[in-house]
Image (cartoon, rainbow, N blue to C red; front, side, top):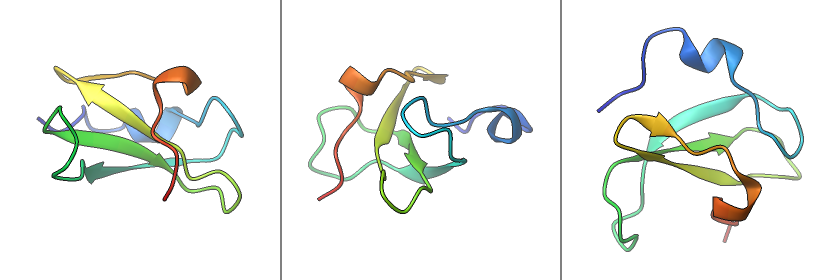
Length: 65
């Protein structure tokens, strides 16, 4: 389920405060759906979206490969 329109305009990465973009979660992840990926060049954390709610906790984020 896509996030509400305009939500990405106000959300930012909690770790580095860069903008976020919505992407499909990788197939090897347990939870299918989408995730919010940080656009910061040095960060790149991917935050899960569960039941249409973005979980913006650094401890829950997937580290870039």
